[in-house]
Length: 127
Image 1 (cartoon, rainbow, N blue to C red):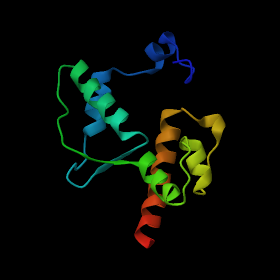
Image 2 (image 1 turned 180 degrees about the vertical axis):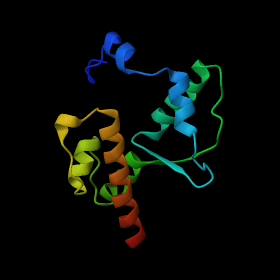
Image 3 (image 1 turned 120 degrees about the vertical axis):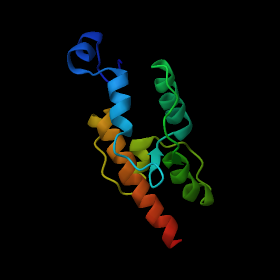
Image 4 (image 1 turned 135 degrees about the horizontal axis):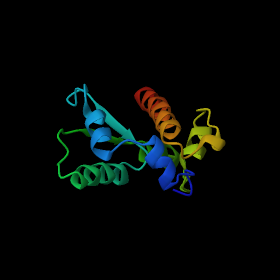
């Protein structure tokens, strides 16, 4: 909450219930043709599964996942580069514009993760 400058008051005033958010999350999505691209997919999928559990449901769909963080580290590892890069650093490294003042905003990070995934998948297809 500190990183994202959230308060309980702000969440109560502007937020929606977890149940509504999760129902909206899966609405209208063909999960047979959809891949979740996540920065740290293991953490994010556990978070998603736990969120559904908290509203007494299991994830009502199956999904495929790409871990963009790992995808970004593979080409660098082939060059002998092993230091960890965060999302902003990986975007900079691969030429995806990133405004660090917007980091940790959920929509911004999600958008940048998707943009980075597209760049990495394109590069993987040309290698």
